[in-house]
Length: 40
Image 1 (tube, rainbow, N blue to C red):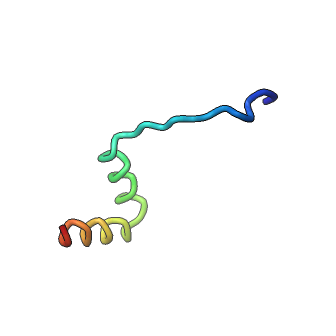
Image 2: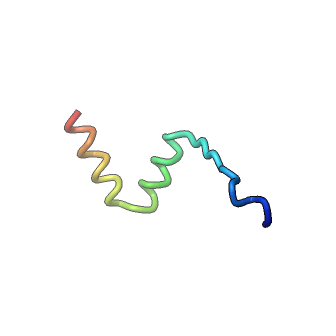
Image 3: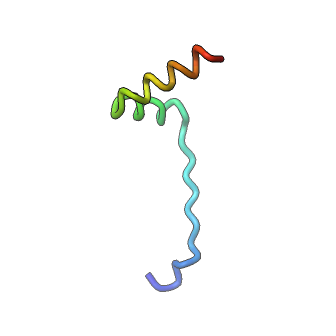
């Protein structure tokens, strides 16, 4: 791994996909997202 100290990683992900992961793994995330939607 020599020479990789300055290696940068860029992650591009589709937000709906990330939201679906959060909702499946953590019911509290669903609750928080619902709060945001009702406040908007």
